[in-house]
Every structure is written in C-alpha cells, then in structure tokens.
Amino acid sequence: SWGLFPAVQASWVLTNEPWLAKSNIVNYLRLTAGYDVSGNDDIDYYAARSYMRSKLFLHALSALTLDGIGNTEIKWETTRRANIGIDANLFNNRVNLSVNAYKSWTSDLLTLQSLNFISGLDTNWSNGGKLENTGFDVAASVKLVSTRNWNWQLGASVGHYKNKITELPDNRTYFDNEYYGATIRSEIGQAANLFYGYKTKGVFATTEEAEQAGLYILDDNGVTKHYFGAGDMIFEDMDGNHEINEKDRMIIGDPNPDIYGNISTSLSYKNLKLDVNFNYSLGNDVYNYMRSQLEGGSRFMNQTTNMLSRWQAEGQVTSVPKLTFQDPMGNSRFSDRWIEDGSYLRLKTVTLSYNLPMNSTFIQGLEFWVQANNLFTISKYLGSDPELSSTTSVIGQGVDLGSLPQSRSFSAGVKINL
Image 1: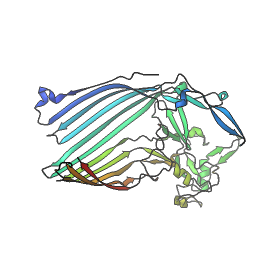
Image 2: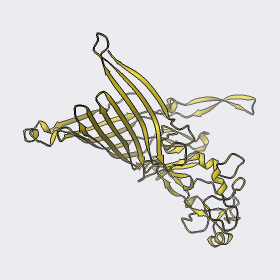
Image 3: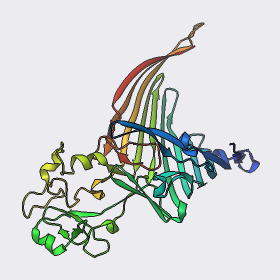
Image 4: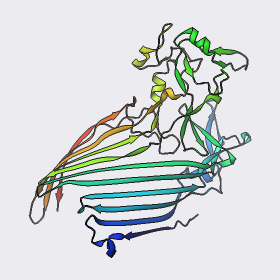
C-alpha cells in the first residue's frame, strides 16, 4: 500500500521589510507557519496477517495453533499538524528567542480491539479512535559577556504538551490496560495513559479507628465480608457504601510532565571553554513497580529497610501497613501508595575543552576535551532514576520496572581539524 502525506511550510522575515529593517532593538525577526500530514505504521509486521504458532501441550505433544487473526483493512495512523513559530535576535544579537506552538489531530489510532471468545484469542490490531495534542516550546539564549578574551552565554528551554482522547473504538468511553500490576486508563476527554487505581489515606492505627470506618472487602462468594483492621491501609471509599472494590478507583497519576526542558551555559576564555548542560522535568508521575514488590510485605522475598517502620502495635502511627502473608486484604494493591513525583533536575554533561591552534599543511588545529556525564540528579523520587522509560509505546510511560539508572561516566578525547 502507499499513501500521500503533503506538507507546506512558509516563513516571513519581517526584518527585511522597510518599516522594521532599521530597528535598533530587533536585529532579526522571522514568522513561520505550516501544516503537514504524516503517518505511523509502527506495529507488528503480522498485524494484517493470520498466522499459526507451534505450542507444546502436556509437555509432550506439539501442535500448531492459531496465534493471530490478521486485519487486511488495517492502515496507518494519520496525524494532521498545524504549527506557528517566531525566531528573533534582539539587542545587537545578544538575545536569541525561539517560540513555537502546535496542535495535531491523530485519527485511525492503531489499537488492540477485543475479540469474541469463540475466536480463541483476546485481541487483534485495528484502527479506531482519535487523539488531539496541543503544545509549545520556548528557547532563549543570552550573551552575557562578549569581549575579545571572555565569552559567556546562558540558555534555557521549556516545553509543554497536552494530549486528549476524543474518540475510542467500539463506541467505548474508556479503555483499560493492565501493565505490571498497574491499570492504565485511556478515557475520552482525558489524556492518554493515566494511572487508575485506589487512593489511600494512611494506615489504621487502632482497632477502634478501623471499626468506626467499617470498611470491608467482599469474599468471592459474594456474601462474606472481611473488614479492614488495625494495621491495614485506609482506602478512599468513593461511593460511600463501605465496600472497597473496583468502583472506588480513580485517576491517581499522570506520567505526562507539566513542563520539561534544558538549561545550559557556556563560558570561554581565549582558547579554553567550559560547557554545562542540565535537563529537567516537572509534574510527571511515576509508578514505582519495584517498590511495590520490595515493600508489598506479603511474600517471602527481599524487602527494603522501609519495612522496619511497618505497623506492629496497637496505636502505632505509620504509613506502612502490617505484614500479612499473601495480602488477603489487598493492602499492596495498585494505589497512589506506589505513585511518586518523578520531577527532577539533572546535571547531564560538563565539558572542558582547549583549542590548540596550528597552521601546518595537514593539521589546522587540535582540540583536547574531557567530559563528565550524569554528575548528579536532584529529585524526591525514591527509585534509582526518575528519567526512565520502560517502553517506547504510549501505554506504559512513567512505569519504573527497575531498569539500571544512567550511570556517571567520564571520557576524554582529541579532535583533529584537517
């Protein structure tokens, strides 16, 4: 198959106009605007094809079973995007400013649709749903010092985006995905990939406090009530019926940051130069899956030292519930107990370089440099690294599966200019 994806981009350099060309403040000003259409087909090669897979039954018999039902009508996602921006140099080119805003509309979302149980499979790929995305990014740099020997430049950028689901397949109003114990909800009118679970209010310190609350879970038989007691988590009873069940879940986190960007500075004296770069993210939530395993307190596996502050005696005030084998009351269920603020500021790179000028037939110059990466990170996040990604998929962003953090490293080199 093939597709046509047109794009148009136009710009207007306002400083070329007579009425702005002689400005003492604005040295360069350009206005840009554009519209483009793009496609995305980044899914399994077999999404449009039915196929069999070899499986072993009873550890002895091998056979071929249907493992995928193809969809010959499937097509790429289509994104239509409009953008507008301004680039400016001000005050004798000492200040550079770039502002861009955009809005996009994505249709024919590639999603997994539910199949009837008689198919023997749960889902297959299809097109369905629409998504809007609105955002902006601003970047600025300032030449604070500019002399014959000294130069100092400071720069920063900030970005923001907000997506919203406007349509889902099968006329559904929401769609839930289970990912490493987390329920990830995509709902019409909301951002994609939100954490959906229980809200907590601490731990019952006394039996009397638990009895007054009267919260319970219902047994599988639909009759027997199991009441929360001292040392159990206090879950928010959203519908006020005292039963804690799936109807009491709510949006408890958003992995999308409020703002993100970089901060940089460059200082040079003659041929010696120092470059420092920070990156940051503010307002993004992270599901700390590893902490949910290492502080669940319900199985025979290693736990963190935070479990030393668990509830152990009547009247003890703590945020860590009691230890109970197999967790019959669901104290370690997916809740805001495992959702953390993933905001951070990281010193990403520091580079010190020296340019040794040369004038020979073969070599025009030598540049010696040393660089340090990931020197330190400022964050309240309890995991190993707030700057993480367990998957490239939209579903699953902001989930920490315990991957190795970005390590501190040092390097050095020589650049030869020929």
